[in-house]
Every structure is written in structure tokens, then in C-alpha cells.
Image (cartoon, rainbow, N blue to C red; front, side, top):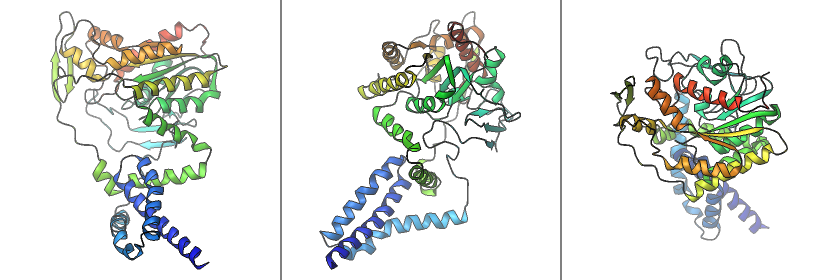
Length: 415
């Protein structure tokens, strides 16, 4: 009996110290999974050290690193209370917290071509997606036209009135816009499942794949899918989410993972025969385009997994599904700087993704050439002068393309 109590005591001590070290890892590492994986590993290691190797006498020394760092953090937090990071996203990243109003403390009121122009406030409506801060109106209750994507579809850096919802409404189409910043195809699938019951039969559902950061590998995709089970164990995920929010607000995490300052941008102007001069504000020479490697096996498999997930969710539903691929600003700028009359494909991943998509049976299109043609025709930048997100001009081009897709979809009727 005494032996059993001894082993139980050693195990509980191992849990305590292992948890402290897992928290320490969470403050140092960027990904949440590093801390979660380290937790059971540390418990097992310390249990073996205390039980089999009889190192109980070194507990004081073992506790010094986590106690020192975590203790310092609690002391700092008590003197510097602040907002919790990532507090507006649902754990599965499918939507935002409904009925949340966020004030922009530093709106851009000086440069109409730059990100954040006149964005004073953001409202997430009752459905957990972007809505009009002035009227409270957002997506319609039922959806005949659907856009799903990341910050590009959310309209990051634009006031609500210039985002996809109002822009398409002015074109005579009342869309449901389900854009969430920082998302990837795995998260798009979570969004589709979240809103599936609102999408009417015959609806046009368009996913937007961003060449800059949507071609993720299989490991990233599977990690994201784990978050999709948050509704199965809500209490457990709620605690994990609170821990994740806390660790991201620690001063240690901030010092290690704060974004690096952007290099200064330089304004460049390019003139092509018969075309209005095109101005670009960029931090490096656009001609020096960093060649993008092709999709590797893991990235290709993740893309196929996404397409299969969409097909399974859409099974027995008469939706018209389209996948639209769009480029990064660096590729468009490289073409402009090289004075290309016809768009040159510099990112091989888009063509690969288009080929994989076509085999899935969906309607698949790449709008890179369209964006470039419109840029040359009107001499305007489809992106912000200081950011890679769509400008008002870029939103307009993509919205017009969506309207053409809708016109080619006879099953969809505006309501």
C-alpha cells in the first residue's frame, strides 16, 4: 500500500512539473500543438526520472526555469493588464463570435490607397460574419450566392461598404460572404459545414484559393481539422482555447513572435505603351520575383483532401460549386515591372492546383490573367499600396467575375 501511494505521489508531482514545462513551451513556441504534445511527454519523462532514476532530490533545480519564467509573466501581467488576443474567432475558425463590435483605435484617415482607409469600426453580425456597423445588416438569412475565403474575401483593410457584400448587392446580387481572416482550405471546409443549412438548393458556392498562403501541407491541414471537433467536446476545447489566448498575450510570446518591422517601401511608376502609368508602393524591386517552388506531395494531398471534404459536404445537395484561384500581389507586380503585355505565370502552384481541381469535378478558374488585364486597362492597382490585400479596385474585379459566374448558373435566382 505504501508503494502504491508513493508511485501515485510521484505521478502527481510529475503531472504538476510536466504541466509547468508544457506551459513554458507554450510561451516559447508559436504553434499551440507544441505545448499540447509536450504536456504528456514531459509528464512521462519526469515520472520516469522520479520513479526509476530516483532524482526526486533535484526537484527544486528542475522547477527553477518554469517557476522563474511563469512567475515573471504573472508579475508583468498584473502590472500591464491588456486585451486578450484572438478573442473574436470561434475555436474551429469557422466564424467569429456573433454580435461583436470592434473599434479601430488607429484608423487610416490620410491615404485612401492604403490599408484601413476610413475603417473606424467592424461588426460581426448574429451569424458570426462581417456586417454593417451602421445598420447592423449583414448576410441574408438564406443564401443563393455564397463566397467563402480568407481575409481577401473578408475585405481586410476596407470599410464594410466597399467589401464584397455591398459591392455585389449594388450589382443586383445579394450574396452571403463568409470570409474569415487567416483561414486556409481546411478552415473553409469548417465554414461550409457551419453554414450549410443556410445554403439553398441550386445555390452558387464559390471558394477562393489564395496563392500566397492557401497551399498548405497535410500536417497543417490535419492540425486545423482537429479544431473542427471543438463542438464535440466544448468544455475541453473552451479551456484549451482560454489557455491559447493567455499564452499569446504573454510578454515572452510577444517578444519571440512579434512581427518584424517592414522594410521601407519605395514608390515606383511604370509606363506601358497605350496604358495609363501604374504606380506601385513596394519594399523591393518587383522585377526580383522570388521563384516559387512547385507543390510538394504533402501540399497536393492536402488540396485533394479539401476538395473531397467539400464534395462530401455537398453530397445530395444541388449546389453549383466553383473554385477560384487568385495570385499574390508580388506576381502581379513582377509582371508590371517586366512590362509584360500578356500575363506571365510565375507561380507554378496555381497551374498545379487548377489541374487537381479540374479532376475533382468542380468548376475551376484562375483569375490571375483577368486581374492583370484589368490592371493594364485602367492603370490601377488591384491591391493596397502598402498591403497585399485587395483594394476597392481589386474587389470590383473579383466581384464582376463572380457576377459572371452567377449569370452562367441558371439554377441560382436572386431573392
